[in-house]
Image (cartoon, rainbow, N blue to C red; front, side):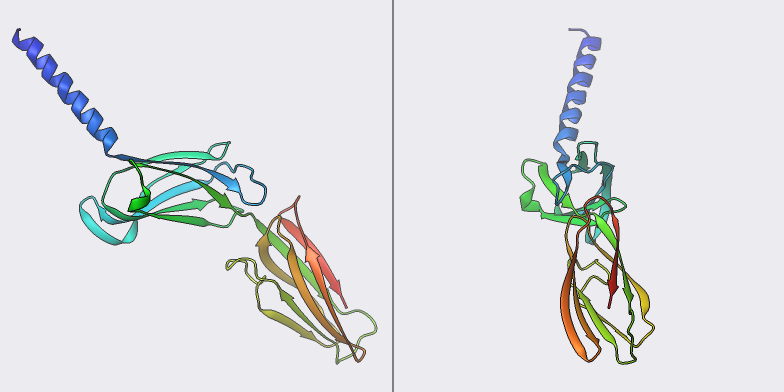
Length: 216
């Protein structure tokens, strides 16, 4: 065997070794992003991988960025990160018009250098509620409004109550809710020396913005 042939075999073996080693050192993360209430896939969701633990030989208690990608038209995504001694992987999902979501996995949940799962996201719905006092009116007129709490990010659609007094009430409450999920509005009206208790339910399927009027 001549020297050239032996050199070629050494180079070939080295190439195969490092090629295999590189693949072994990758963690493959795959999955699909869907709308929670319809099951439909969501495309163009930015999927970002963060991790804490040993990253490039240095321990980091805070989450550090590793890689990112976008979901395809069928909602699927695939991304690779370097294998490491991570404590946790935090996977962030973001798309304009949707609530930002996170999934956290510890090291024991990564099997054979792969992780696959499905993530549901909820779409933001803007709710505008006009509250207006109508004839006959009196200075003692009063209305109390409360929204059922849906999500911690859902702005004023929470457990906070809104109270309005007097004759000239014509105002708009804007809050963020969740599309495909009813918004429940509890109302207590004190008018003409009487008290009325009622509940409104708002559901938006076709639009991400809904207007509602309360006359009392």
